[in-house]
Length: 177
Figure 1: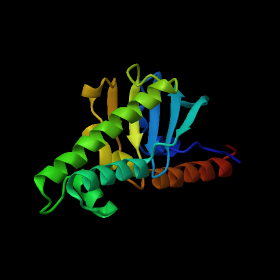
Figure 2: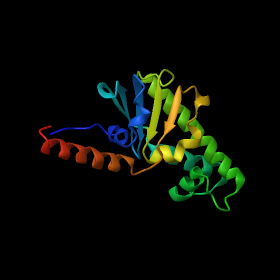
Figure 3: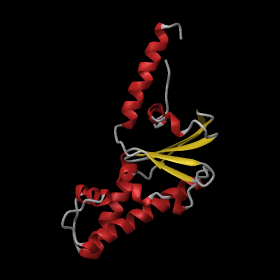
Figure 4: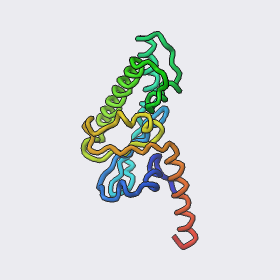
């Protein structure tokens, strides 16, 4: 039996992202947590695995609270996510600005928490994946002191990666591997 850490499977789909890098940080931004793992020479380093309770639910809640405080509106998660993706329909520009300001603050707090956990995102490329990466891609940029942010915004990437890894393992079993 083989175990693969969350996020590692995405590299099965995009091995070119890590091929020439001695160390890479994977950041899987989910609903409840952000799972971190460093790859050294393309191998997961178990000692660097961390799970921060800073998932997108916290970001959405902070945005929702700020919009409620400033405008007296109770926005849905779907409305906030739509604005974060850049398609906010007829939403008031002031509300859209608050959403993006709060998302930027969340992204900076997240990057700070990653550094505080012992993983220096300025020293190595950071690969962001998961549903949160798709929502935050405009707020995770090299201007925030990142060495090189790579954003994989396909929310099905982990599933596709696991499917590929299982396929590779199945073929290996049949050939003595």
